[in-house]
Length: 463
Figure 1 (cartoon, helix red, strand yellow):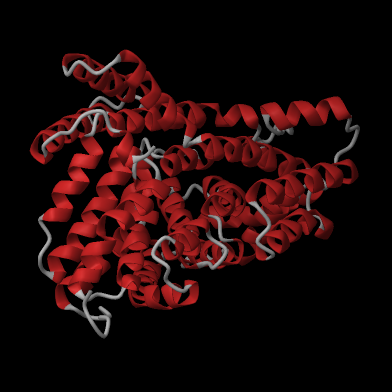
Figure 2: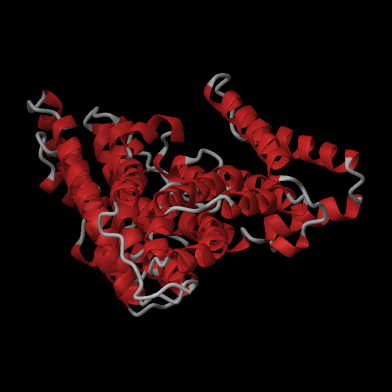
């Protein structure tokens, strides 16, 4: 989707009114009427098509806009399929059950949510992928939380906060590399500069998760030994079951592409499964990859822990991603997004307003388009010249792109991250949103620092 492909030249006010109407309709439908996001997205697409027809836009242009938008999500959709297979193969191989067992070993009733946040943050930095962290370790922690009758919403918030801390700060992360590369900022200078906002957000988040953790060990924590013994009795906990994870982490550190890294994780999981599962067959394994791993022990807690994954489990997310990106394509084709960006860019004069406007734009694009990469690309390109004219180093801009772009995507119910995490963790975006403290604090801190001038780096001269 390119800005010069727009077929209409709109005034910023008209584009703003249309955008607010669409966002309001979607939000009202999801929050008030509690419907799945697909229908309000479809209605928004109908609205945009109708608007295009009124403005005498050719039908073929409207169709091409939708197709162009959907095409931008093909990479994410392929990853969804692969991650679905990764989860099911890692269930069969004992990889995730072993993670669950280890999570039960380190779990502490008084610091449960803080531990979840910290561990997922560490793994997220080492892997560089919030999706992979959430789909593997996150699934394990959600299973433990459900078995112990703890809050699934807070647990999901802790997982997402930790995973996106890693996605934001890891030199292996796509978004981290994207934000620095489009502005030609050194990768490690970019990461170092982000610590000004990221470290306080991490500390505050840890404290909040610690305060929310159960202060008294309830009887539920006495079930830990029962669950551990059950996993051992099913012969699903082995040291060699962690080999697929070690291989995946190694390939990620070597910066091997996500597709090949996930492929290695899946294939190694399938291989290990033949040593872990009894009476396994190739047909059974193929069914597991598509439909997910099914546990039939008769023990409700164990079956709910282990029955997960498969390509089929990703269908809800994939359909919503296609619809939301198609809507984003129409927003481009009709000139709505270009007009919004142009209107904001021309109104900027002072540094505090510049940084606040940058953050608001990145957040707004996440809600309008539902794609974090586009929020980084479009906002970065729109504001680069303004930062240079104001005498600000571009690493200020790259930091804002991550603080208000990368970490906001999981908070949007119809975004790529939002629909994926809802599908994998089993908690709706609206339910976990209040507890994603790290994601909520990051844009607040970046705007606050912009207003005060703290940690804002200026260049030696203005262009």
